[in-house]
Image 1: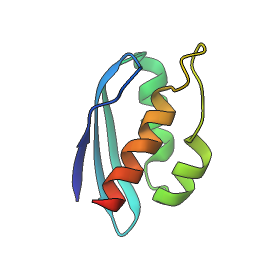
Image 2: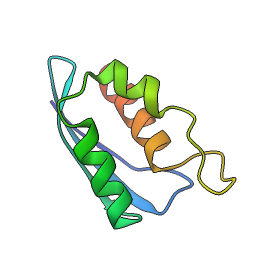
Image 3: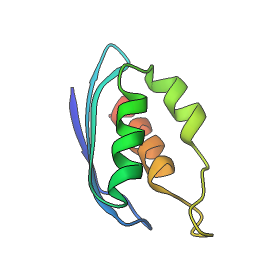
Image 4: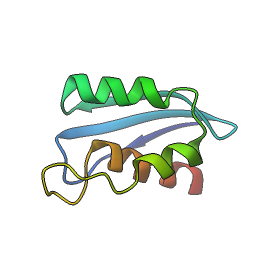
Length: 82
């Protein structure tokens, strides 16, 4: 399944996901801090969706109450519940 998510409260403008059998095959951010979003994308590749959600949910960036990793966790939750 492919899924597109529009993040809220962060610099990135879009997250595109490819998920198969609850495993993240591909993750790409549009916008945001390029090095950080590329790093997060590579780290979650091949990871179980539920493990990624557990690790990323609640990470804060500069007191915003969210972050690109937290928004990725939200995107993954929406994707598996859609």
